[in-house]
Image (tube, rainbow, N blue to C red):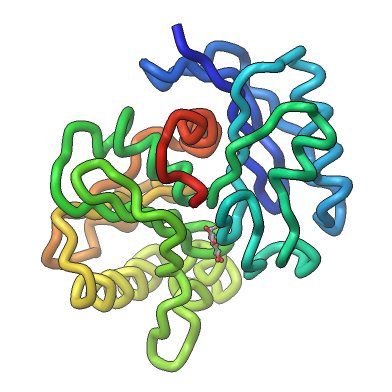
Length: 249
Ligand code: BGC
């Protein structure tokens, strides 16, 4: 039974568990610790190492991080501390844990979990997974194969960075009703559709739990469904990335 330790690094919490790669199920209880204040590389990596040590894990290790990640190195920092840009995350984690990790973008991780074990399981063609949270993350799949590091949350929409207007945080910040926010998301999805023409769009993030409140207001060409793995998608996908040929490249 192939297993890997998945770590999902977010702005407020770092979550981890051992995952069974065949079923996508958590093998151990999900652990969550606070992200160190400021979210700078060294304390975050120390926290990751603490989780690995507590689990007494020395097998495959996957880490999902909210930035562009190519060959272990972070190349962007839209919603995280700017010190991450240029940081070799994989090297820092390896130094601290003695395990060489696979590091990948957080939305790519969530997407991997959804396409294999969630709402996208068995779906061929072009599938786009979007996570709506503090920002908008994207994961693009063609017949189940990931196209890593798409950053569709940063498309320009009416002169703005799209995630600034259509992420879940925009709804909170601007006090929008579910209907008002759904219209923002619809506008964004129409823009994305005109560029990519996906066969299916999956919407993830915390809001997927309450999809009945807003999804009915969204009317776009491609089928749109809520993601189904919720909280665990990042952990499961981080673990799955250890066996994926393109994740984090
Ligand atoms: C970042 C992406 C990330 C997304 C979700 C965006 O601001 O640019 O890399 O996947 O937020 O966390």
